Image 1 (cartoon, rainbow, N blue to C red):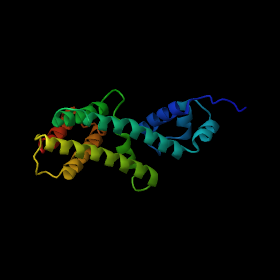
Image 2 (spheres, one colour):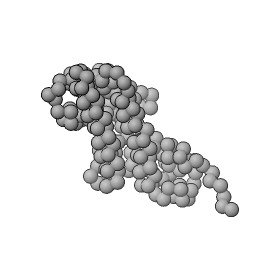
Image 3 (cartoon, one colour):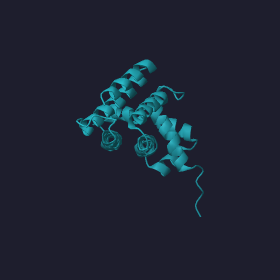
Image 4 (cartoon, rainbow, N blue to C red):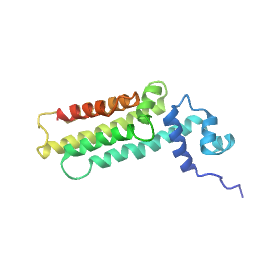
Length: 192
């Protein structure tokens, strides 16, 4: 019988996600991960294969939690405009909250590795598509209920909302301030 694992791999992915999110992929060393996870380097590599493989798992975890939460919020019943506002305000509060100005893990990854590392680039692309699809569905629902102008192209509006969201997350990381972020959110929602 082999030795039992001394750590929970699922919890380790969550801790690793926090390290990568704070520091970025390149700046995170295997020693940073070992220190955060409380395991030896051998256990790290045995459990996850490589720093890169662990990074991919952390990015998938982020997708499964953060992107899913946005989709769930937008799928709630009721008027759509307040749901969109709540989604944007939630992101503002998250980005400016107690965890520090670490921004969005997906946006950070896109700016650090986008176009240079295929797997993370593809993971981020799919997260953005999922978010854009959720925005498109919300806009279409708002058009059906008469909240939004029927002549707007839902796909174009969803793309604009995604661009506003990504921009807001970059601004938050650069210490853009709550007032500026609310101005962006207000302008994005005004065009509906």
